[in-house]
Image (cartoon, rainbow, N blue to C red; front, top):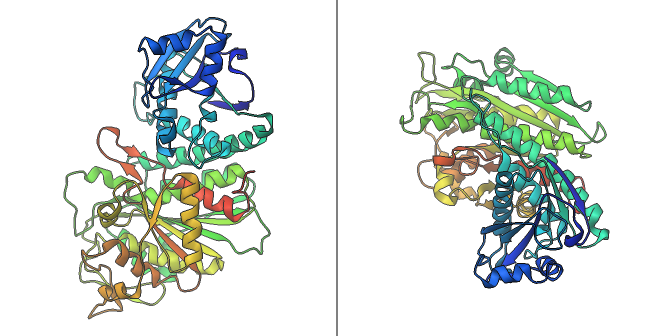
Length: 501
């Protein structure tokens, strides 16, 4: 869909549809009042008759409003004016896009970007509207033989801003929103792919395809033979029971001088996690195709980064692997020597993500990174702690943790920081090795991060557990594209481009 910004009076817009807000109880927004005056009280008359209360998400489509050049006017319920917050604003935008798609309006001018949202400016409102619109239009029908398409889909959406001075801000918001949406779409597409298609090799192919599109992006890979030479025995052990070879894919983006230390994003890429010998229950096991959500989000963030050409150096490390039960599979009781030389006693083969990540975190030391952020659907305990609303954030480095939390607030892609105190490390003590791969039920998200922290001593590091946020279950099952918006915002901020005014 095409987006643009303009600044103008609503009654002068020649469009298939004008979108304006109505608050509870039956109160026109400022822009709607302008239309009402031009139409000789037509809108206020409808409200008096009770056609629209103004509750959040209510829609009323009007045709041939007197003295209005636009063919249609869509009145959108926005709830109580003083209570309009970020979440409600995004929900209203999504519902508006859905309604416009059903009306047959192929273009529309949207004045909802002029609504007052607590603590948010024009940039945020336009960018969030773009992202919400694109998310609302997302479908994954690549594998269906019969595809349903909207009869006359919305093709162009114009956001109105209050003054011409804000036009550059709105244009920048659209640019950022479109790039992030493109990254989110790639993340969702890759994560939604079934595991018979999305294998570790498929992740490598998608990474290569990204590198082929941009001059300053390159690709390299580490295969199992190279892993064996490097001593990445923990990574190799996890994939041993699968017929699909493990592949560590590396996407190199150079937006700054070659000698500038890179930021490294590491994504857990378990393309299917059966649990190995510690096999999972069969109920909902199909959703274990989403155990590569971290890898998909890194791929999406790298796409957004390349689209925006942010002046930083970033490496996306996509740790592709599959965890299956087989005669060659690793076992509970095995002791593995990691690439770092530290040994790990395996208590449960379903705590496999940290074994793949620990060798990857050691491997990337060769790039002398400035900062490392790993992203992983690592623990069910994170869902117990935070539900499906916030990703878990853990880091021993306070400035980095604050950067990521700030990016999460700016982007609306929420994260919550959990402690990483030394007291939790004791849960990993093993009688037979340097550590065990499971810390027990208590504080499972934190002890998993404690495990990873033992392999990150040579750089500033943060861990994002996205087990609760990477996908939805139930009727709307599918990947969410998170935390691509947060990661992209983090990179924009690092490049000094997070401030838009």
